[in-house]
Image 1 (cartoon, helix red, strand yellow):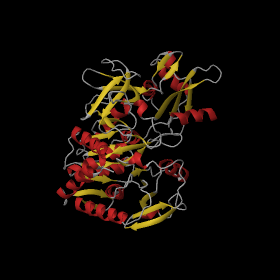
Image 2 (cartoon, one colour; image 1 turned 135 degrees about the vertical axis):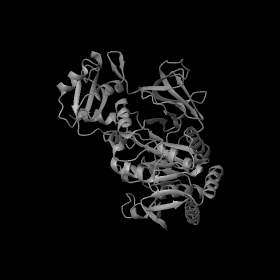
Image 3 (cartoon, helix red, strand yellow; image 1 turned 30 degrees about the horizontal axis):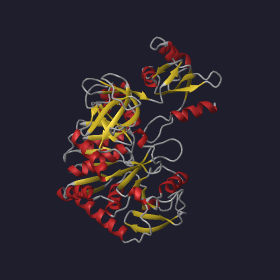
Image 4 (tube, one colour; image 1 turned 45 degrees about the horizontal axis):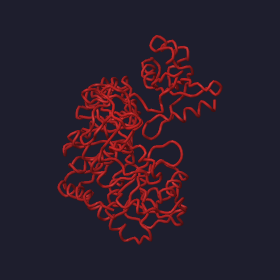
Amino acid sequence: MERDRLLDILNSSLKKYSGKTAIKYKDITYSYEDIRKEIINLSDEIDKLAMNVNYPIGLFLKNCPEFIIGYYALITSGTVTMLVDHSLKGEELSAIANDCHLGGFLLHKSEKGTFPLKEKCKCVLEYKNFILMYYQNQEFNRPYEEDKLKDIISCRFSSGTTGVPKCMMYTQDNVIAASTNWKSSINLNEEDKILCVANYTHGLAFNTSMLSPLSVGAEIHMIDSLMPRQIAKYIEKEKITNFVAFPVLYQMMSEESLKDKYDLTTLRICVSSGTILHAEIKQRFKENIGIYISDLYGVAETGLCILNTSEKIDTVGKALNGVEISIMDDDGNKLDINEQGQIAIKSGSMAKGYYNFPGLFEKRVTVDGFYLSGDIAIMDNDGYVYVKGRKQDFIDVAGKKVDPKEIEAVLLKCAGIDDVAVFGKKNSKTKLEVIYAAIVSRAGLKKEDVIEFVQPRLAPYKIPQRIIFMDELPRNSSGKILRRELIEIVEEK
């Protein structure tokens, strides 16, 4: 495993800023020197263990200082580190472990008794707040392909909704490029204080809030609460400059006039990613918080790509430094300005491929090295990208392509609608696609009220034929609406 360049960058920074605060969590403060020592000590303990085969280890931790320390300690010891979503249950963990040849898991000592796979694993190391569990009898789905992981330092998993998630492989160059692209694009510096509430196993947190801030001497802040007022209180107290979160939280925060109760003027950037926020929410957030939300477009396979630091609320922005964006057709041909096609990405942060789905990643990469994202967009003369939707999310209404986001944007203007998801489902008899709208409303709206509102605002073929009311919409950990799950709910009814 080639890791020297990454560790040189990290260690150089840990020494340079040794006396500065690196991480704050609850009542715990780690200096850069504390982090350096903890990484060395834990990696030394891991090195003492005799491993028959160099299997990858799953990092199974919530957002806490141990996540960052554990990640770099595993890499320092030469272990391929797979970032595993902490919300996964036993069967899901077993499926990933068997499919991706995990030899064990690094977790917090407080979870030794509740770890879902404790019966299948043996504790081989206890060090401070860490516990390393090894599988006792690995039962892998196929032979271990150690050569495939030769240059890989870490892996993340796609947020797929069915089956085993895809395991994306990253080299040290990929991780360094993602960090460099981000920090140079937002002028990240040692005066910054970053509060990220996204899960650190997700690319949004991993790429914005780990190596990037550590490499420039900035402060990383962690908080357990996801309540808007608690977050605002923390931002005021710690004078946070950079806030990173998923859209659902921004939607919650936009509904409260927090700027009248808390001093949030230290914020210089609020980053949202996972799904594109509706314009109504962005405008409300600006009015109630005092700052525009910066949409950050990224693809799990390529890392962070496009950022909007302008006040234009209908665009995801321009390409980050070090990232090349093009709009292409399905065959990988570049399209003209303002011509609609797929967002294609070329960046040093792009994954090497899928460990457990060989060949699938490569099918989406053009001969010029661009990754076809599947997201439909246009680009204007100034380089601003306007996302129109996912290729597979467009609804085919009698041959006309309907963008669900357009309908959602209209519905969100209706008083009483708190959340909405629009999707298509084929009629079992006619085989024609029907537009559905799943609505969350606390105001007791009726279907008739919704139809009356949209009729003067949408073409007849865009008006939802089926409206269902729900207490909440199903979303994944990134805040993305699970449209497939919505279809299943409709089918059950």
